[in-house]
Image 1 (spheres, rainbow, N blue to C red):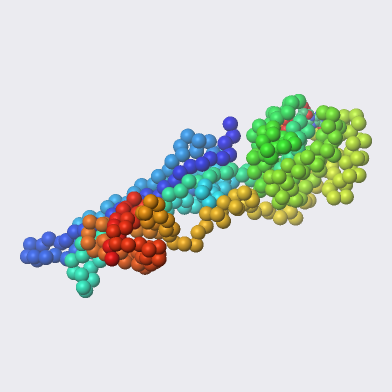
Image 2 (image 1 turned 90 degrees about the horizontal axis):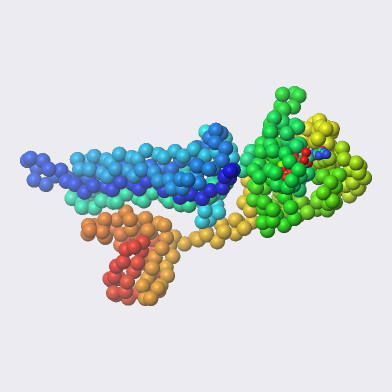
Length: 424
Ligand SMILES: Nc1nc2c(ncn2[C@@H]2O[C@H](COP(=O)(O)OP(=O)(O)OP(=O)(O)O)[C@@H](O)[C@H]2O)c(=O)[nH]1
Ligand SMILES: [Mg+2]
């Protein structure tokens, strides 16, 4: 099977905790603070690899966690950082945040790297909190939690030209004639279940990549036939070849076919439907094709270039390849676009606030990445740690927000699993 989509979980390593320690020296009664910092948590990194063709690996392994940093130790010894976790993914993979739909990376070159989950920084040891007013701090930090998120991976093949059309119109036969690709060809619908790529070599030594994709039928956007998701493999193409069976060998009207396929492309994305396009009028060797070709030319000839061919005999294919080679250098390289439904999600997830305050059964609940991180990094059993945390609540405006909501002495507040009573 061809796996071109996956949802996985990635987590950067947590930072190691800072240490609380004091020097003990024989003749020094009270040594200075000597707790070292925690080590940095490791990152999860994606590396694009042209040797991989599908996302099948991610079907079986869906969780990727990088190592944590080591804790700091006494005698000012810092913890060791974790080693980054490198994950190889196929060239052509688009990486999105599963919750927001935001595109984090589009890896189109072999060796391209991207950090998809940052490791947390190490917590500071107490040695770092010494000041003129506090010579013996008992304050240290826990490590910062590593970044974690769910990712959607989508493989979008890298091709210059995409073949689209109804099943059985001869798309696979065409690619088999103009390139070394050897796709299955047969006289039934949906012979092609997964996209095939073929390299078309030109006489001048140049070449381009053609993608043969499964056939579309009316209602593909609602799931009819094989659906329309595989159109993602045409997203990077600069030119669409719209293949028609102009012989009408299946009792359909090629003009009607054209309109249906165009509508399906539009349903996938307006942008895709308006890409540069050539019409390939195939099966010209079958009697009766000529009449239909005339009708197609009359209806569509002004707007589109039409190439009569026979993939079976090879007639007309040279001219087609030549025309593609002419059009390609002019055609703009499409940027990976965010489809409309995904865009919607992005805007929904954005929130200008650094935190959210809600109330449930009298309890004040505070959520937000930043404050949750502070909770995890605070050592609450140290009085100084507690004091510092209170300061963070003030600085972030959480204090003020709670007061504005009418919080009273003794009310309960909850943040990231921590519950405490409000005290003035
Ligand atoms: N007579 C004739 N038959 C053709 C021509 N091109 C393709 N065929 C036949 O049409 C049938 C379908 O061809 P395919 O290349 O498998 O069609 P496809 O568009 O890839 O079909 P799906 O993969 O099902 O979407 C096969 O039996 C081919 O031999 C042609 O130019 N003339
Ligand atoms: Mg096919």
